[in-house]
Length: 401
Length: 166
Image (cartoon, rainbow over all chains, first blue to last red; front, side, top):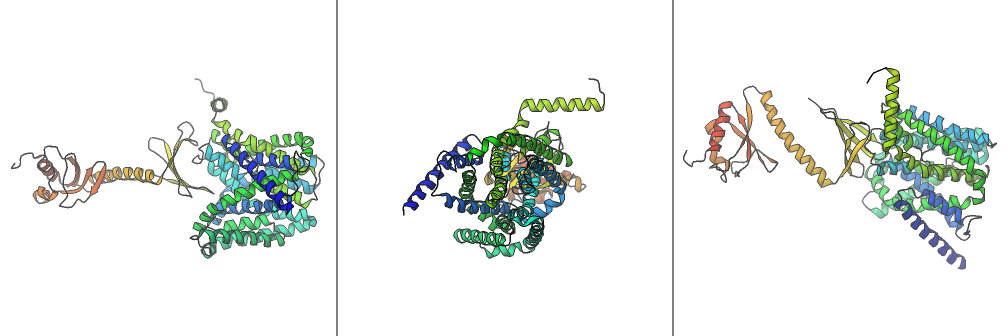
């Protein structure tokens, strides 16, 4: 009885604090993710005020948070969009993977960590945060811009790549080695292909089994289906998150639209719990030693991400200013990086400093990213581009004024 | 003559339609999946960027579409001129002093007298297509007439008539 009372007090106080933090971050037009992480750090092991009674609650909440984050991501896309996009944007996705995953992996090896940690860190630096970026684009009124489809298609490819990467990492972290990883990857590729085909051919059947008319039945039905599939996927070693993502993709039409509306508040709650829990399990004492490496890694991968967007936009004939907008918009890393780091932490077999490094890295990119995205709108940046373009033209063809 | 409208999918958001006008400006509409619509105008200096992003409610979008549709209809009517030789269209305003103000269309007997037809009436920016014989004219209405040159001149004369017995 006493434990339960403490639990209520701790959870209540923390959620209240998160509410205040979220409001604060909205006022400054920033994503609340960094503040949630900081709150978690403050109350975790070795933090200012450790919470003990509610740790188990947050652990379960965090698992549900990951599943909800992924199912909502899947709901945003239809299977047709994913497949159609894959054909046109595959080269951009490839550039993205090479330019951003390799520096992360190389950095881990440079720090003297093993190849499993390298694989994990590569994933952390690879994936941009679709949630943060979509919000930045909407805030800056750039949804109609011609470079925006380029940004979105890079994000879609990353999300789809995660459906293959997460099972691989899950298997490798479980200590099965490369062979086990290969098997998991094959199973994942097969599952993803089957789900895409089924969703394109029979998606309307799955969706019509869940009526969009009754909100309560729909909420329980979609949530139940998602958790069930996620659980089955986890027991098959294909990562619960990926199972949830595939459920989201398989649902389409009005069911997907209503489910998005119904699940949004739940996602907001459990995703916040997830970020806090990651902060809780990361010890603040680990952060100062990794601060400089994290900063260096952030600077390097922010550069490579900008280059990715720049090249991807150039490929489809976007002019110089648009290329910079695309590049700088892609910088923030967020929920996915934490999901990957969370998997590694849960496995417990990797370099202990990884969690601290990931948290610091995400904090840096998620805060500076939206600020960098605003750069191309400043007059001095436009002036700089104009003089640059002028200089290039003068080099190419000597003209006299 | 046909305009090229480009359609671009925005995964996770919706779809964007855009076109370049003859005057060289690019404009588009972003249709969000949740039903929201944005009218976007592109920057002439940087054709990839939006200069303005104007969210439209359902009613606003409908009003705008109506206005564009009405003026479009007029354009198509006057386009008839080029398609059928000898057949002309004309917009004739009803003067305030006309004897047909406040009287039904049937009273003009325009078709029997001139063999030209009144195919539409424009009133307050709205188009009334194929007005019935019982349709009552008001001062300032503009009628759209289709017929030969002589017929159009005849209708013009009838509507301008101010004397009840002229």
